[in-house]
Image (cartoon, rainbow, N blue to C red; front, top):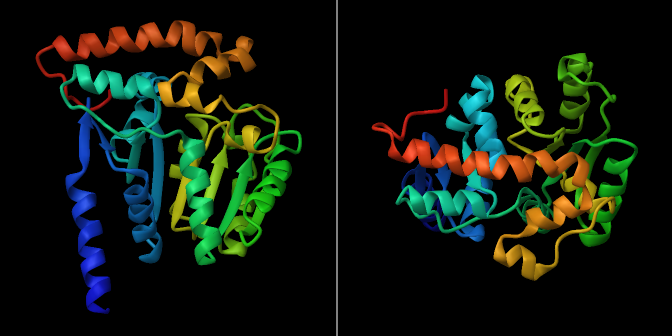
Length: 272
């Protein structure tokens, strides 16, 4: 390894160990986007199995109620803050997380990296042809992007109903560098964690509704709404029936939970 590469690797290792904030038992990486992408690429180049998890208020509530998902968040290789709610709650916790991104932002940045450095991606998830439309849009955005494969799962309620061995075989056959899974949380994270030891993919990430936006099913919030942390309000307007409970009920529940955790004697216990 060249001296410059050794120095860069040392810098990345420093980022891995220093820039993490304990958010009520979940280690959140608090880095500018460029450093976050460098950290991901560091794992990729080492061919280390890496599960990227985005943490928003909805996911945090799941993590407190679902033991399996809570363990995934608490032991995530790279967990980043997704949404203004986590940042606000970290201020109450006196931790002060500074950087937040949506899963879509991170996915697009990793696609940018892949197009620039000849890495390949695999898209798994979505329904009604949205994964194919997402792939087509990504090819327009990044003409040099290598899309190793796309796969739409059957429309079933439980991930155990998938032919998972066949899905793993199809993914491994294409040898992608990144696997983006859009099954909705916490199903996508549970699926990744359940099969990561069989998947020959260095970097895996659940991306929720990102395929829907990239595939043109829904529009994205205007830039000013995103900057102010109000993207959730735009999403609620797009899907009121599906998201009313998540936001109108979930946000007050999240704030009450954070306050309860803050004022109890041992607030930094891992999710139960």
